[in-house]
Length: 576
Image (cartoon, rainbow, N blue to C red):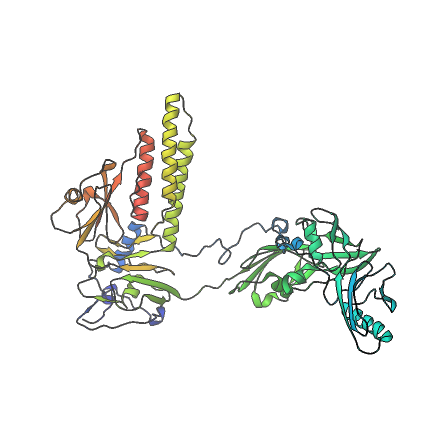
């Protein structure tokens, strides 16, 4: 049997533009094994009746996008205060710089008084000594005399010592030198740091080592871009830590005893948020910076397309929205808020199909409805329960989870905080509190299914599909599932004429905790009905609810309502 459309388009009296749906692929299977996934007029309503049916069913067909995320639509009315954000580089002093003292033996190190140099010579003359650098910057070489090495690098010292020895012993002599150790220094750290003070180190230690010793930069008032190294009242180095954070570059002044590191007060700042890897307060070195400079600092996420710039100017508050390629030339000033966003909607959604069908499991669609998707799906003949199609939707799942969370919170607030008038009542409330807390803990771990019932009373709603939808096309079933508060939860073969009680007795009957007045029947399409007013069908699940173990009628009623809510959302009967 060939694949035909789900809806009788002549009956619906509407045409579907071919461009409105771009299916990833459509498979045609042999006529012997496949039938069209098409339903009669009794299942799919005509256009006029369909609209009325949708109004009665209260189907939530809102888009799944989070409109408060800044990705789409309006942003918060109140601009972000730069002082409310951590500074860029706030985690810099959690990396353990204070535990990495330098040894001062790098090739650029300059010799100073107090250092020690190992000198070895063999051949025409032999000696092996560690020579200290005296206060005049000299080392004394036996047989050669004093040699000034202050300010020289280790390579220069090697050359000077070699020349001094060979000038006395020109033939058959070999020389080796090595910087044995350096004189420690004490450096003052002050300004806007957590713990100003005097800290010990070596001349070649990094500035970060001394800053980390002082507890790091004051995140509220300290500058990451204006750090000075002072010596004898003059400035020997100015450090901008942003260059280190972004490019890994940092000046390496050789410290001397008595040097001072001064962290200046924080300069003008801007707040950056939205689709960036980290939301930070960025410090400026002047009164403004360009959009291109900010993009280089903020490290945007992929897909950013627009920028919102808000702030105050002499003419008054401004709020401007730019495409990202126009933002590079904009001027950002102190106190501005910059919000990056991926403000482009994809024209294509991806919908997944599961259950009894032929073809691919995912389809790429454009502005499609359920009927248009089913039009392209072939199913096994006489093996598919087309009248029980349902959809798992992420937005529905979130709504179910939020509703359950609010119900549990109300239960906890209402009954755990209620006062007791007598000791006996207090003891009962303690027992109930333990029961409620355990119930809330287990119920909070359950994950709603997000099932959207689209098949109802023999009709299927032709709703608009959303990105991430999972369309379930169930297989025809010959079984019944009996679960919940029964002695032996099991699956049984469906037999026409058997009642709900017959199936429960076949599963061993009710447990002691069963609420015999509250039994649910869960249909294949996700619909949940009371067992009193239902005709069983193959594929149904009988769910026996537990009774609330409390004599407090109001508490029992509240818990019972939540149990129903959980059963509808998760198809699980939670045992109290």
